[in-house]
Length: 182
Image 1 (cartoon, rainbow, N blue to C red):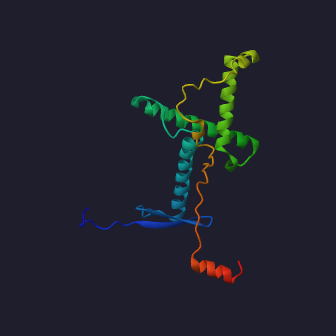
Image 2: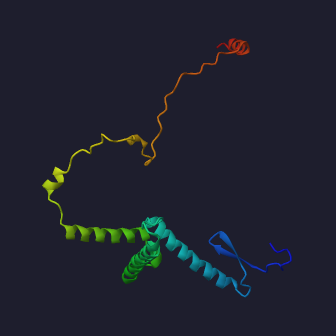
Image 3: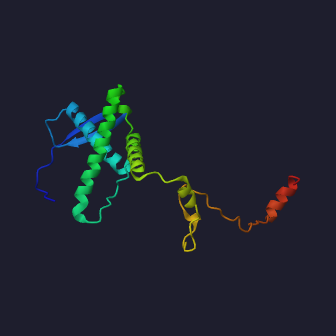
């Protein structure tokens, strides 16, 4: 750290979102409150988009096995999610529904359902008799873990009561109980 360097000159903005105050610090000294608020709102939308990709689309981790494929997978994930949300917004606009009503979860579910339907029609639906023929118990003879160890949904841990702990009354407690007629 250079102790002889001049001090930093920063601007502090206080933006209100409902009752909540948000404080922003910037080195852009010419910025006004309205611009800072608008930029923060735009950045927040970008953060929400990435949150949708990571949580709703379950893409918190990349699945490619080779480092040279990371950018390709990331780009396709982002483009696919963006396209799905854009298409959902267009559908809302066509119906006259406000854009803030858009549910990313429901948009992704609709796309998933359509892709699954196309897959079912392309591969053919198995005959009922084939499905019944596959309705057999799984061979669990090689199981190494207990089924009870699954952690979702959270299950209560059953603990034995154990041996009771008996506390005998002291002489003082006995005298007091006698005086109370107990």
